[in-house]
Image 1 (tube, helix red, strand yellow):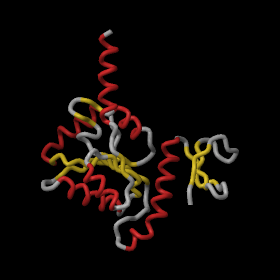
Image 2 (cartoon, rainbow, N blue to C red):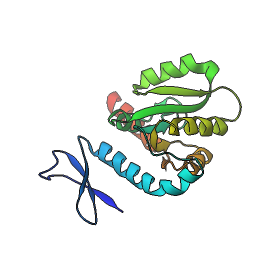
Image 3 (cartoon, rainbow, N blue to C red):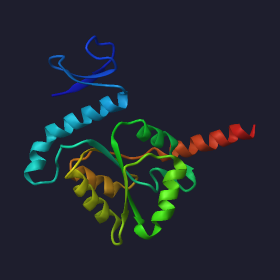
Length: 189
């Protein structure tokens, strides 16, 4: 059953999630991003019947987002500022799941602090295949959270998340790099 977002309703002071077929209010949110998260969760819960039978997907618990570091939040020295801002503006749990080795935790924490990402937990690779680590971490998170989105530059990782019933998104890091260069040029002028 499809849903959409409306504003200006008498029964919702903010962004309303509404059923298309009968106009019933499903939820009212302070931000558009939160309304989008609810719609993603509603669509995911519709698709969950098949996945719950084999234990891969649970649409319970608080909404959460998984995000990668390298190539997603940062590319070299460039920060994906638009993504960081978008994540920070959501009322969802944000879990950083990276292929970086756990032995580099201090540097990863310093990087996340420098870029200003507000996150709930950092899951680093204890060793071994990065995609296996991401899959195992996602499975553990799905036991307690309704993971509505995973943002990762790695196509294989996105396929793993999608197989678990998690919507995915490739980061727009190139745009972030262009914006950073443009801002640097403006600062020089």
